[in-house]
Amino acid sequence: MTKQVEIPSLYKKYEPYFDIGAAVNVKTIHTQKNLLCSQFNSFTAENEMKPELLQPEEGLYTFESADQIVTFARENEKNLRGHTLVWHNQTPNWFFEDKDGQVADKYTVLKRMRDHIHTVVTRYKKDIYCWDVVNEVINDEGPELLRKSKWLDIIGPEFIERAFEYAHEADPNALLFYNDYNESNPEKREKIYTLVKSLIEKGIPIHGIGLQAHWNLTQPSTDEIRAAIEKYASLGLKLQLTELDISAFTFENRRTDLLSPTAEILEQQADRYDRLFQLLREYKEVITAVTFWGAADDYTWLDNFPVAGRKNWPFLFDENHKPKDSFWKVIQF
Ligand code: HAH
Image (tube, rainbow, N blue to C red; front, side, top):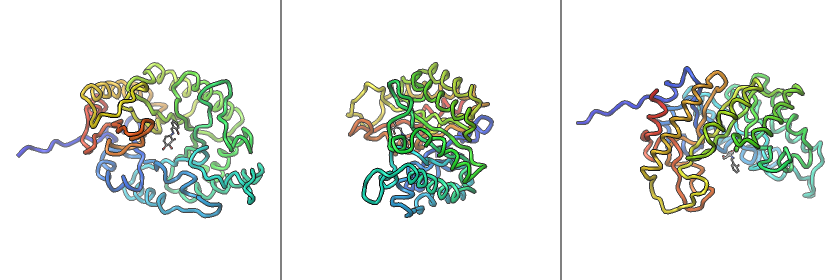
């Protein structure tokens, strides 16, 4: 009989550095339970705490799915991040409309934002230690700082400040994050820096920047990631990688024929994870958590996105929850 090799625990190995987190959902807390509990010490709800799931109609709060995730984290003594309060996506239209379906006025929308934030943050006060308060408000390209959205159209740029203030009122102990993707792109990095710096200068309660870290085999480069970490850290805030995955495909690669990752992909991915975690360990004083946007390759939001009919394998664990070479690179140092 072959002896079962004991798999070391990533979160235990990284206790002197930062939390190791995973996005979970109401399915994966069952299908990935053992892996989640043995390898991770922090969770984020992938969708269950987004506005469209928590308040699909004005005043109608649906907490059942979010509560299941809170219970799972509590029972297993894991940290829990909240995601997300104010976003242009997965937010129902009623937030922005009056009873005749016309554009609602600024004070109505601000009140709805405050009611939502207060209700949600207060409910999970004991369980959630930090919130992604505002998600993805920076423009990817062009001279405009802020992305066009209904929040911006109706309230103006102050919607960002108000969101942080409302969250802080509801739970003065919660750590409040600004969260965005393409965060290591030099152009967008400067814009995120400008926004967060202005919030700090106005005395707005903000404690961290979330680097989503939806990356691939080649981009962004390690140098760009380092430059982003340095720049954001210079603001004196805590940093987290909030949604890490390393897509098995480069941006240009659109092939859909693969049923499993090639040896070359796995090797490149392992090398990429190796260098990345070396870099992250260097910055352990400012990085407080590294959260993957999933846990193992049996389920990822990158399946069929952005290329329909394509499976992806972005994580440290394979479809059977077994460690990949990437895992061994990250844990052996
Ligand atoms: C993230 N957006 C979101 O923060 C998260 O809530 C969602 O589950 C997955 C990814 C990343 C993103 C996007 O929304 C649009 C285009 C590119 C990337």
